[in-house]
Image 1 (cartoon, rainbow, N blue to C red):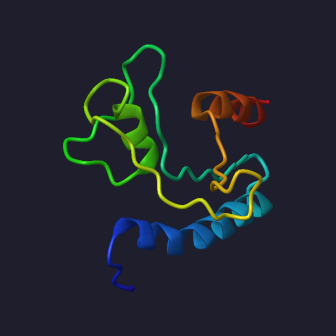
Image 2: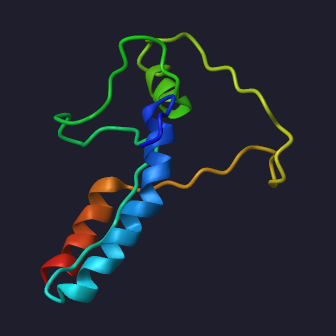
Length: 111
């Protein structure tokens, strides 16, 4: 087994292996339905407030930091970088609503 410097490195290496296993299982077990999911840098909270994120220190994730500026935990957000090949020069990030995604995929798994 390889030694990784952190969990992100480890999970990045393991994902292709896990996806390969997930593809192979239904071939031998047809009643199985598998959808591999990978979430990277999840942010936000459920509207109930029962699940969410709160960092004790200074977050190392931009979106977590952004969330904490409006509530006064940090006074401001400094953004660096404006030369990405996009219309406004900012980086593009995909947005996925995890709860909606899981509800949609559960329909596939159950039927």
